[in-house]
Length: 132
Image (cartoon, rainbow, N blue to C red):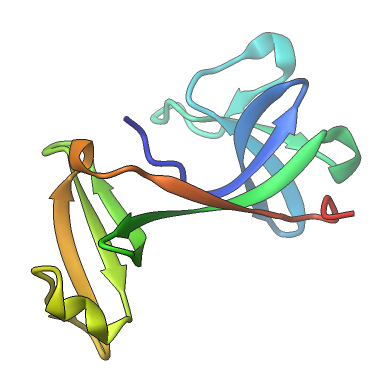
């Protein structure tokens, strides 16, 4: 299971991660799609990019993954594909009474769980003017 986090756009009915560099937007793909104009930036990379404008996109949004545990909301910090675990963080101090969390940073708490033991939910916020 992949954890989606970051900025995404819909182009020609398909979802792509979107990145910006020097005020230019690029769709990102894990494969080189010559037909649709995706190009690799380097020969050492499996990632290909396509420059687009906001007008080319059907939708754009940022995804913030989270998990609810014992009624508490945790942000998904990282997903470790190698061992199938997810690191979750919250700043709610009351979580210490119900879950085995460890202190992390200032006023935060962290827990690491197997991804198959949690349900990943997503907040999806419009970006690039698609909120209208």
